[in-house]
Image (cartoon, rainbow, N blue to C red; front, side, top):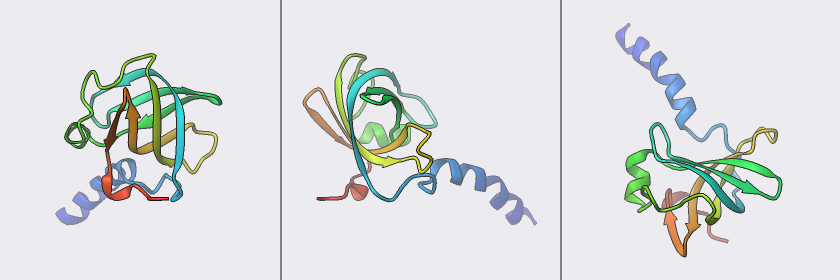
Length: 117
């Protein structure tokens, strides 16, 4: 019974932190950083693109830091290119980034998920 309770409690966390909400195809988003948040559960960026403001989720804080993306890696006004998987619901301007390029540097957030052309 304890195992069942543990599994039930973990399900919402897995749904939030997994990839099931994202499309399998990757996209490239170019824009300007409006906001940077380096905090749990996922560091994220608000990016103004030609079609509006997107939420760009990065990895968990440890993973993002290991990729080299830390406080100060991006700031409002910086040009950014993000590669990742967008929300399956097209009404949501949200993506999970596997790689971001900002300030002349490339950060591979999820190296194993970067699809080569």
